[in-house]
Image 1 (spheres, rainbow, N blue to C red):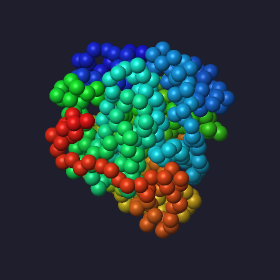
Image 2: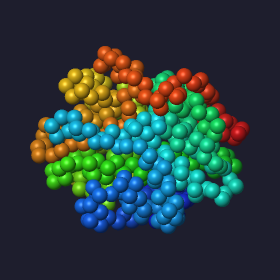
Image 3: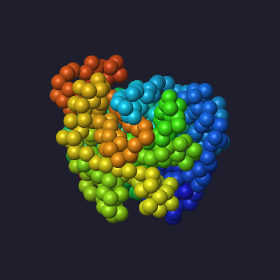
Image 4: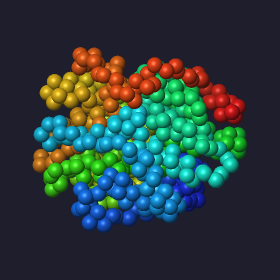
Length: 431
Ligand SMILES: *Cc1c(COP(=O)(O)O)cnc(C)c1O
């Protein structure tokens, strides 16, 4: 499969180079040249297939023969070594739990897939690759865990000081080995801006092969489409219209869902559920796309002022605003509304949601007020234990620590504090 840059200036490239580079030379995100619909029989018989078989069929065309069949199957088997249960919540509302992986957030799948692809694609190279990544919370842990011990790969994670939860911080600062954490005096947007600048700095790129493990990297972004197939597979009633509510920050997850629809998965509508960082909600209302600095909320993994994947969504809908509006709904919710939803879910539905999932739930509720005869699935993108300081006071109860969390919570944090791009640069060059 060939990929082109959405800024249209860089030359086309293959899967391997797109994964190793992350971002094209012209700063554009890579996008596949072609999207081929899957056979209807695949969708019709999905219940007979294992998750691994579904994932292989869905992603095969995007990898092409650059990774041999057996190797790609191994990568998928290792990536998907946990469950993705669909849980009933209320009438016409279900949730797909994406938090059963090693760091208990949905980003595990993308990070594990990308790490294994990179390990394979770079296996014979003598040049180390440095994965440089900015995190608003969950990416850091997922990338740290996914890439730990991968040969020829170093990982540098930038996270905003005091703006990630304790569990999240521990997950990205305690693993050691090839994983280094940089604690940045600033916001997530500052971290992301520094990472983008480093990619364009020839003073760095002439000596280091840098790549990104944010959802701008196709190997992180593409496997997220699996979730939508897994949800569909588990639905008892496949005739009722299906709507996904996706708690969104950088819009990688929902954009992967739109790709699943392009492949033929019968998805009626998407709901982008936002916290108060709501560029896209406002865009759909007004037609004006106005980027703003992000600010902190209790669903911190969605505190994004300039969603990096929105340009891919525009591409999928051929820059046709009306076509996009036909498929995509978006609502935004305050922290107070989110807290109320968490309490309601706990008291009335016997379900402990994390703040991001709760925003997804609210999106589904809002949509159902106006639209009948559909079923909504909201994605529960993280386990509530990752946001203990928010969740426990709301439900007035303790959440037992799952083993994945117990393993890191008592370890000692190791991070380097930086407050400028210059410090990032010397850190990268010193190693
Ligand atoms: C990253 C993240 C999101 C947002 O996903 P995007 O693909 O960036 O839109 C939502 N919830 C949680 C828990 C996350 O970690």
